[in-house]
Image (tube, rainbow, N blue to C red):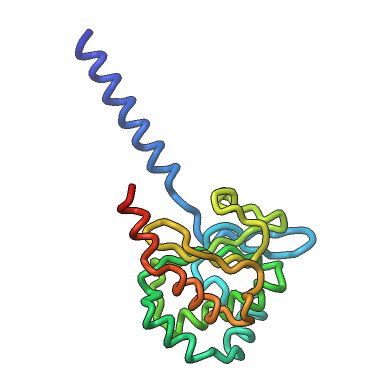
Length: 188
C-alpha cells in the first residue's frame, strides 16, 4: 500500500509539473483574421513580425522616415536605458500605434537595445490579449510603453508622448527614476 501511495504521489507530481510548464508557454507571433480589420496581430510578438505584410506597409515607412532626436538618444545611453525593461502594448489596427511603435523601434535600434528586455504585446480593439497581461498593467489606451526596473514600473507613455517625442519622454521617465526603485526594494 505504501508503495502504491508513493507511486500515485510521484505520478501526480509529474502531471502537475507538466501542467505548470505547459501553462507557462507563451504563443509568439499570433495572427488572426478579423471581419472588420482583416489580419491583426494578437498577443506577444517579435519585432520582425512587423516587417511582414500587411504590417510592413505602415511600419517600414514610419520607421525609416522618423528623424530621431539624437541629443535625447545620447541622454538615454547615459542613463543606461539598456538596463531597463520595456513592455509595449500596441494594436496593429490603431493609427497611434502605426505612428509611435515604429518610431520606438527605430530609437531602440539606434540604442542597440537588447531584444530580451523588450516585450511587445498586440491587443485587439477591446484592448485584450490572449494572456490577459493588459489587466495586470491596467491598459486603457494604445500604444502604451511601460518602463520597468527590477520588475517594478517606473513610468509609462500612454497613447502619445507628452513632449511629442518618445525618446524625450523616456529621458524624463529615467530622470525620475533616480534609484528610487532600488531604495524601495531594499526598504522592505
